[in-house]
Length: 81
Picture (cartoon, one colour):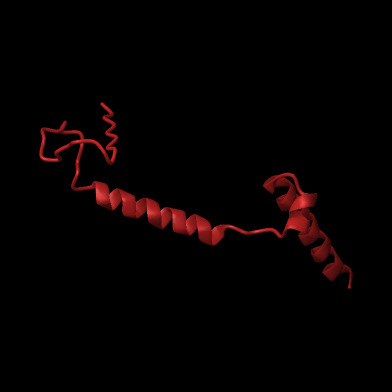
């Protein structure tokens, strides 16, 4: 069973109320910290394009394909030299 709790700032709530056993408030801070960690990892892998470059490509797939082509051409050029 998935329970979802939404706490609004103006709600009158008491966390000591009886909660379903499936809710583990002890682990919630840890889950938030893990999400922050994963978000930071994703941010570290993010590459930002300058506006002039972004205008040329309509998707990340297009950017990746262009880079793969450049890599293949570069490797082929080194082999021919």
